[in-house]
Amino acid sequence: MAPLPNIGDLEDVTTPDTLDQHSSMEHVKLREADQWDVVNEILDESDFGKPWAEKSCKGRALMVASLVLKVIVVIISLYLFICSLSFLSSAFQLLGGKSAGEVFAKSSILNNPIIGLMIGVLVTVLVQSSSTSTSIIVAMVSAGIITIQPAISMIMGANIGTTVTNTIVSLGQSIDRKQFRRAFAGATVHDCFNWLCVAIFLPLEAILHPLERISRIIVSGISDDDQVTKLDFLKVITKPFTKKIISIDKNTIKGIAKYCTSGSLYDAAECSAARNASMMTSCDDSETLDIVERCDYIFDTPALNDTTVGIILLIASLILLCTCLTVLVKTLQSLLLGRMAQTLKRHINSDLPKPFGWLTGYLFILVGTGMTILVQSSSVFTSSITPLVGMGVISIDRMYPLTLGSNIGTTATAMLAALAATGDKRSVTIQVAISHLLFNIMGIMVFYPVPFMRRIPIAGAKALGNITANYRWFAIAYLMVVFLIIPLSLVALSFNVYLFSAVVSVLLFIAALVIILNILQKYCANRLPPLLQTWEFLPLPLRSLAPYDNLLSKLICCYAKDKQPLVTVVHANNGHANGHANGHANGHANGHANGHQESTLSPARSPADCVISLSLEDTSTPPPV
Image (cartoon, rainbow, N blue to C red):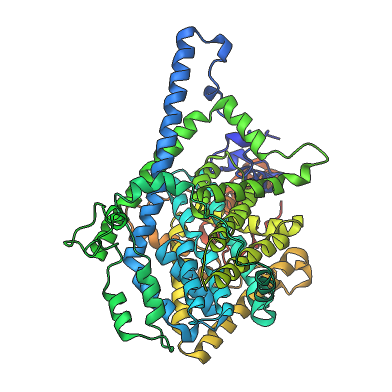
């Protein structure tokens, strides 16, 4: 029996020669699991270099100087990276801010919780800021345009929409397949958690209104004299630079949402003024020193309209973001080598000493909360640590509690802002902020304390990471479908109530059927009819991304397809093994031919191919060993 090679030395493509006839499937599973094991990952011995004691004085001086220079580069890159996120948000507001206001103005359809959810997602994606969309929702509630019930569903949507930023950031590591797998999974674990929470609490809130009732009770106990000062840590550092480039007037979106509604607050003059106003802060009528200073930015020129500035800023912000991300990742990779990488990974991804090991995750939730409050943005915090997940410094299991903490941190920031507010809007602002906080806390109570429930969003994120590693275009498709196509389609269907109800009912039925059948296939497949034991009865395009991948590879001439499906390798190896069992000469030829024929005639399916099954394992019956 030929010994198996070291798991850490395996490449993405596994050949039949590297597999043993009795352990091929186990080897494949170990290799797949190893993609996520960052603590025991085998590092290149050349990265360790000479120990400090063996270096000369000159070598030590060069090492210290190089370390200081790299730390400075990391700090500058991180600062510009955060600024690029601010520019990206401003670009989206210039391009889609007024459209977001028009969507909010459709108050007649917001009473449908699903539509409210989708509008929250769509608007947050358009303005690239959950705080902006939340402030618009609060303004609409305080103005009497909507009640607190549809506001809560839109807050849930804003919670989902804000995750698009770190998903975009993960695309910066798409060149390296291994890093992209981890980075995309680290980014989408936030999506999985938010969608799972919405699946539970949106229908619960629509029927029983627990968030509304609890938040009302809490608000009734807060005095008008209980005010705090709004915190503003990160913006103090970034504003001096970002405000020299662009300044956005968010009141334009609020004006459209408030005065262009079909309700009693409709004001033709105010609506027309808001629609014709620029999203950029105007300096024409400013006389005070504060406004003049606020309007002193590069794009303050009447020759450029909102769309032109938005396109220029979008391209520039994406270039700056990708450049800073590349420099940041490369510099951190050069810093986190050898013993430093081993030490950092071991300390970050290890548990506390017994008997306090179970508190480790909760400690990281507190760290995520504190860091998000410090930087005043969950998008900035999660986008900053997503590259570290791709590099293997932080595991998915550690990224998950940090993400949960960022969810609490962003609501705590809104809570402090609400407590700092004054006037008749204060109680409504506080109630919306408390509802947002309760939504995230209840979600954590469901999907974190119990280990089984904790693994669900992590497994979903790993499945998306595996798919994206095999089909890199899937990341773009995921962004377009989840954050644009689905919300837009449901909002468009909402104008026909019967059609909307029929489509949503069919989608929910299919989703429930797929989940139930997957569970049955996994735990009691032998009791199912032979047809339902696998997903092979479906056409290939409904259970695999391979046909779409082949189509794209033909349409895009520069697409390089450098992967070899693992299941094909197992088939060939099984044929090779059976050939050895029946006779070396004839068996080898027949086994090779059978394995080659099977991999040619039957499309190979990797665990990431079976998208409709939503499972982490291949649902097809493995060949006998």
